[in-house]
Image 1 (cartoon, rainbow, N blue to C red):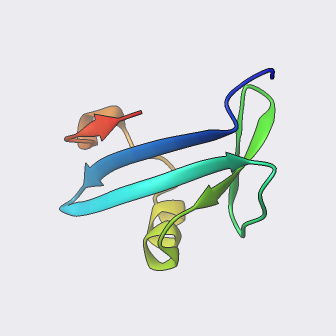
Image 2: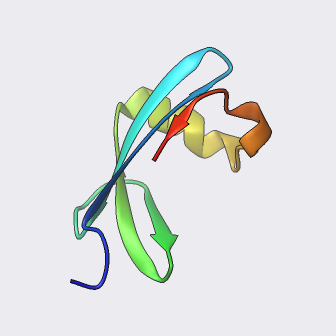
Length: 67
């Protein structure tokens, strides 16, 4: 195996808790490339739409993170 099949990312931004799963080979409306590998972004759809609208989240704005 060349890399992880699934990554879980949890963080808080502006009082909202996000728990996101990045899954290699799964299908979703949103995806992200990490080191040339495409991962489906899975989680609560309403929160994912908000997160996509952020475009980027600075590390300083994340109060808690666990990767």
